[in-house]
Structure formats: structure tokens, C-alpha cells
Image 1 (tube, chains in turn yellow, red):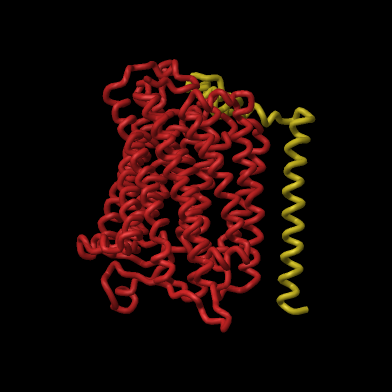
Image 2: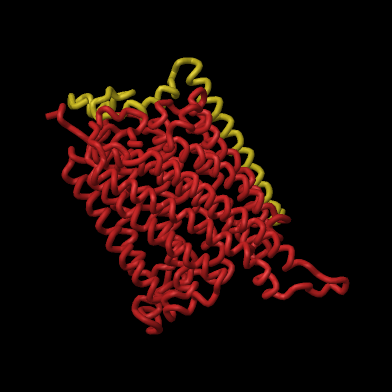
Amino acid sequence: MTVGELQAYGYFILTALLVFLLYGYIFHLYRSQKTGKRDYEKYGRIALDDDITSEPVEPHTKKEKKGEA
Amino acid sequence: MENRLEYDYSVAKLFMWSTLLFGIVGMLIGVTIAFQMAFPSWNNWLGEYLTFSRLRPLHTSGVIFGFTFSGIFATWYYVGQRVLKVSLKESPFMMGLAKFHFWTYAVLMTVAVVTLWMGVSTSKEYAELEWPIDLLIVVMWVSWGLSIFGLIGMRREQSLYISVWYYIASFLGIAMLFVFNNMEVPTYFVSGAGAWYHSVSMYAGTNDALVQWWYGHNAVAFGFTVPIVAMIYYFLPKESGQAVYSYKLSLLSFWGLMFVYLWAGGHHLIYSTVPDWMQTMGSVFSVVLILPSWGSAINMLLTMKGEWQQVAANPLIKFMVLASTFYMFSTLEGPIQAIKSVNALAHFTDWIPGHVHDGTLGWVGFMIIAAMFHMVPRMYGKELYSKKLMESQFWIQTIGVVLYFSSMWIAGITQGMMWRATDEFGSLTYSFIDTVTNLFPYYLIRAIGGTLYLTGFLMAVWNIYKTVTSSKAVAESSMQNTTPMGA
């Protein structure tokens, strides 16, 4: 096998892997939303409720422990 | 104490003023060199200091590293605090770091302007600054990174809003690109040749070209795209009162853009001495790049779903919707130019600066202007001085952009066709000067388009100046969404 052929196989495998990862990520996002594991859409509120006194969409735990949130 | 906590905009304000200053200077130089293209005798007015070759790096550095990066930093110190729900006032260290960031930036940009005007240059496009200034850039950049991650460490909001991801990507991307492209050998210290500040690239020939365009194209990615997307993901939802249409799509587009962009730089070197497969890869990834780019842009347009009346009512929304549209336009045009057969015609012609400017003027410029208009009233507790002035500015600048890119389309394609034309014996039909004389009207139209854009920008600066100095006071707490503006 020549170096060129090796490169070609490597390139194909890498591309296939990345396509798999991309579609896997889409699947993961939608399944998490559907099963209620994580509501991604609520994070859109972070830009809207952004006063320093606004209730965080998801409070940062460290701050909460310190009682600062 | 906690109840009285508020965001601190002092550094955001400083960067906002430098955005405006560099905008004026950078665009003024741009208009000057556009006229020089039409009237070459203008080159001779001030000896070496007004030649195109001296002014061109000043224009690009002024608008990229001056105007755009000041805008990025200004919006970071505004948006970063707000979406992380943390104030710079809470940490004297972070406050000091932010100020250090600004002043290092101010010093290095001053040195950059002076040295470039004096003709001190590495001659690498968009990386002209010599090594001592590069070291200063590293200090400035690291201080920005520390400020990003420091604020993140202090945050009250657990999840990082999508804009923060884009700012982080901009920081990391540019850091990597900058370091590798600016690997330079200081000639004086290595061989005793040249001035102490002089250097040559560590790479030679084709390798240098490859690294240069990997850098050059991704500087567009992480300077003109990623941080501007960060801005629109915050400012459009905030100004319109509509949450981003699909947060999931924003995440997907983010990772898509991160992966695809880095491979597309090879399209700058089509039909050059770099390996053929790299050229093909550059073309293919450029076309694939349409997907994540349009993913973000369509997400923005869909955010306005059911709220399109705001485009007519609010000039800030107008600027942002048009910015998003120009982003789509530019990210379709780029891949078309990256196709090998199209590139054979387009490369080295005026179509390329045409493409760059519909992206920078229409997308980057409009988005930064809209961000400034949104931030100024909130930072200074004033309503925007004049809505009418903004409306007029919008149309003057839009006409300017259209004149710019349409003239450069015609000029570029004319040029490309003339360069390729042969007679029945296979000899070239035209000499180079034939193309130059043919293109005069288009160069003139481009310069007029640029002048209109600059005029609009000056109107924005005046509007902001009047807002700060003489507008009606409005409490920040009452400015939830639509920015208040005087007639």
C-alpha cells in the first residue's frame, strides 16, 4: 500500500467518523430535549433575563453554596 | 450590598470609543486608497506616506484590529457580564485586568499605526507587525483570555450562553492562528543582518503561503465571523424581546462552524504550488461551510418570526436583520468563488475585495454599529439621540455597500475575462493596462460607495456623541428590550 492510498483511507475513515459524530450530536440534542433530560431551549432566556438581579436560568452551584446567588 | 450591585461598563465604554475612533480612521484610509485606485496621481501627494502600499496595511489593520476588535472587546465586556450575571465590580482583580487589557491594546495599536505608517512591515498580509509588537499582542490577548475565563469562573449562571461559546472560540482560534503564523526569525539577533526589530518568516515558499492562508482565512473566521455571531446571538434577541428561535440549532451550527472553517483556507491557493488535494479540500470545505453559516443566519431570521413589524419600526433591528442577510449573502458568495473553475476567473480580480467588503461592511460593520446603538443608552443611561438620523444612516450605508460590491463584481469579472481572452492564434488579446483603463468607472463607483459608508459611519458617531452628551436621561432598568430613541 502506498502512502497516498493510506492517506485516502485515513481521509475517508476520518470523514465518516466526523459525519457519524455530527449526526450523533443532532440525535443527542433532540433526544435529550424529548425525554426531558435537558431543556436546551430554556437557555435562550439567558439573553433576555440578564439583569444582575434576574433569577439565573440555572444557578451556578458554587455560588449557590456560598449563598450569593 | 447585594441589592445595589450593578454591571460595570467602564471598560466596555473605553473600547466603544476606540471602536468609533478606529472606524473613522480605518474607513477614511479605505476611502482614500479607493480613490487612489481611480486616480493614481493621488499616491504622490505626501511622498512615501500617502502611497497605496503604505496606506493599505494601515486600512486593513485599522478596520480589522482597530475597529472590529475594539467592537469585539467592547461587546464582550458588556455581554459577558450580563449573560454570566456577574459584575466586574465584584472583583478588583478582574476590573484591573480588564483595564490592563484596554491600555495594553491602546499602546500596541498606537505603536502599530506609527510603525506601519513608517513602513516597518513583515510583508505578511494581515500580519504585518514586527516581532516586538507581536509579543505585546500576546500579552494583550492573554489578558483578554484571562478576563473571559475569570468572569466565567465567577458566574451566577450555570450554563454558558451561546454567545460566550463564540467569544471563547474567537479567543482560542486567534491565539492558535497568531502564534503559528507569526513564527519569525529576528534577523539581527540570528545573523546580524537588518535592524533589531526586523524579522523573516520561519517558513519558506509554499509552506509559508500555506500557513499564511490558513491564518488569513481563519482570521476571517475568528475575527469577522465567530465574534460577530456572538454579538448577533445576544443583541438581536435582546433588542427584539424574542428568545433565539432554536437554541439547539445554535449549538449545532457552532460545532459545525468550528470544525469546517479551519479546513477551508486552501481555497486561497488554488492553482498554486500547494498539493492538489489540499486545493480540492479547501474548495470542498468552503462549500460545506455554507451549512453552519446559514444555520446561524437562518436561526437569527427565524428569531424574528411573527415580529417582522419590528424591522420597520426599529432601526437597530433593521441593521441586524440586514447584517444577517449580508452574512448569508457573503457566505454563499465565498464558496462560489472557492469552486476551482470559478476561482480560475475570480482569483486576483476585484471581485475578491468586493466579496470581502459585502461581508465586512454589510455584516461586520452593521452588526457592530447596531451593538453600539444598543449598548450606549444602557451604559450611559440616556435615550438614543435621533431615530431619524439612524434611519438615514441605514439607507446611506446600504446604498454604499451595494455600490461597492456591485461595481467590484462587474470590475472583477471584466478583469478576469480580459486576462483570459485570446485571439485565434492563442495570443493574449489585452495587455494589463487595457484592463486598468477599462475599470476606471467601477473604481470610481467603488470609491463613491465607500464614501457613502463612511458618511453613514460619521452620522453614527455623531448620534452616539449626542446621546452621551445631550440626550434625555432614561433609567437602565426601564430599557428591557427596544432601545429608547428620540425622534
